[in-house]
Image (cartoon, rainbow, N blue to C red; front, side):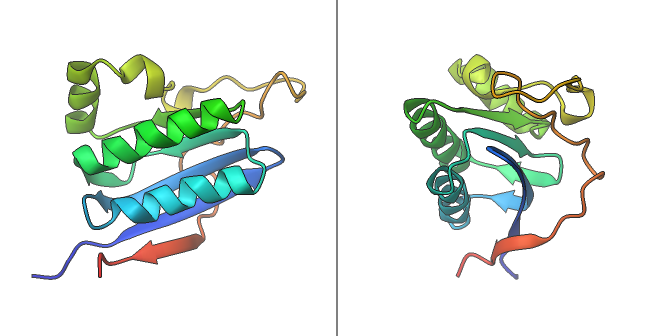
Length: 141
């Protein structure tokens, strides 16, 4: 049986990035997510929105990556928010009590900002409105 692939798409806008993950996040693919999120910080990104709409599975290794990345982002003076997680991941976030730390509003319902200032980050484009170009991809090998 082939190992499911994870693809990372990134769309930057000033100090804001929309990361869209496609596939499964597990022990083998979680390092790819970690590298992607750490690269955002190295590139000076302070607001990271992660769209999980196309994610079909995320286990505790993925959750650990998101929690660690959130800590790093907060330490750097930024924010990291997960949007549209799969139902099982939402349930896990609720059970462990970290939903308030990680979850943002659904990507399709984020308010538009009339003026983009440093205090008002750019709105996240609705899922599907940005052409996704894979920046990283892995098959767990």
